[in-house]
Length: 110
Image (cartoon, rainbow, N blue to C red; front, side):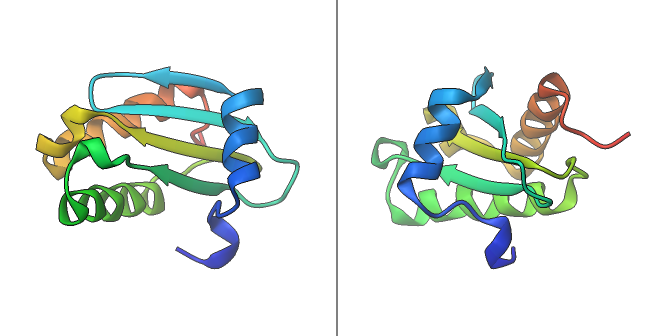
């Protein structure tokens, strides 16, 4: 994922949580907000209660790849927040969950 496609500052994450809308299911929460830019930026929050560093990084890698492969409209800030069920979820379950949340948030192209 390119540098301009990532949320990195705490104030950006906070703005998405404060001003945006969110949708949730068992393994994930999706928060979105219009950013007024020509690019969609993604951020991932995986807390320590989810598991050790290996588990957290695995979830983050999977979510990054799912986001990269999904055709999301331009101009959004998107934050994924992992819940405890994400630790035991395989790639397919996370993918289905993320795509359903994208659909519910109406940020998909087409």
